[in-house]
Amino acid sequence: MKQDHDLCNNLKQIRLRLGMSQQDLAAIAGVSRQTIGGVESGHISPSTTVALRLAKALGCQVEDLFWLEHDTVEIEAIPAQQPPVSESLRLSLARVGGRWIAHPLLGNNAFRLEMIPADGEGSYSADSPTVRVKLLDDLSKLHNTVVLAGCTPALSLWARAAERWHPDLRVHWTFDNSMSALHRLCRGEVHLAGMHLHDPVTEEHNVPFVQAALQDTTAVLINLGIWEEGLLTPAGNPLNLKMVEDLTLPGVTIVNREEGSGSRQLLERSLQAAGIQQQSVTGFDRIVHGHLEVAHAIATGAASAGVSTASVAAAFGLGFIPLHRSRYDLVVLKSYLEEPPVQQLLSTLGHRRVLSQLQALGGYDTSQTGEVVATVNPT
Picture 1 (cartoon, rainbow, N blue to C red):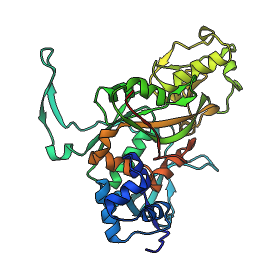
Picture 2 (picture 1 turned 30 degrees about the vertical axis):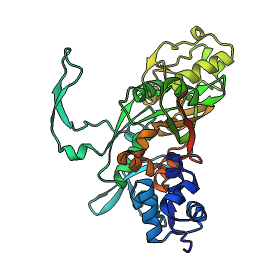
Picture 3 (picture 1 turned 90 degrees about the vertical axis):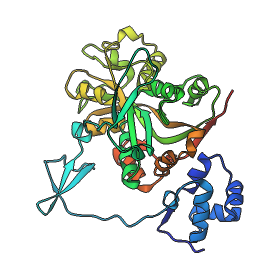
Picture 4 (picture 1 turned 90 degrees about the horizontal axis):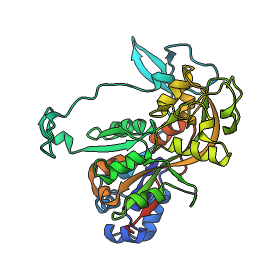
């Protein structure tokens, strides 16, 4: 088995998500542990037989494990509007009238508000714990759906990229802050919960909160990325804000996030560390829901600052004052890892196409993306 530099694989990430050692996988697939190590490191390209054995042992398709990485293709395109000069831009491309047109993904144009087609219709009754649903689509299409809860717009980006890679896969993203997403996972409403909470006592991200919530169930935490969190300001930072203490200056007003969100937690922790009372900050009780609402309030002049991420600041052309590097993890029950649609979605997380999308957003460190960062067992 020779090395093929164009062949990429997700073998290690999928193996670790299933809690298997290299020796465990080698025994099930009927190959040596050295073969597993060589394939994972990219020093060995497996034969067709070995690739099929590995896929069978892991309960997935060969395409979920291996793919060819081709050289980047470049094309000439005409900008749809006058973009900022000398800036790296995320672009949407379309062929119009025989020409490639590049639409800059900036501000509100970086996101889509769209009507989601319904799978069925039904009515709720106070007398019944269930609802009778009349299907509006084929039942066979609904089995391949993954439900993902979280607050970062990057989840939607990842979902769309995964659906392109697996055309039969459907990813339903529900917008929830970190604690809300975790509670929905506990109630069995979603497959994966995205969260970015920090425990100042243990200095750990996410794990203590998962341990407290999922006391009787084994869960796996998989990293989506490490992102920069901080204060968003208007473009050019006209009030010359430099630190959290400046939020108490005259004329400065903020918007805040709801209870349970990682952004609110960071603001409260930063104010406490600086010895600032919450009531000293104008707008502390002015609540908006989500990173986009924070950015919109600042971009429209409704607020001077608010806590969000560097990637959101870049998307809206806003100023950014870093406060904390936070680990954004995906929490999934270990039992869900065996479900084919969940495997399909997670198989794309370490793919170069997905990593490139996250890196293009700005403010994301993808060095741990796709890796199992913790396993939480029943207490």
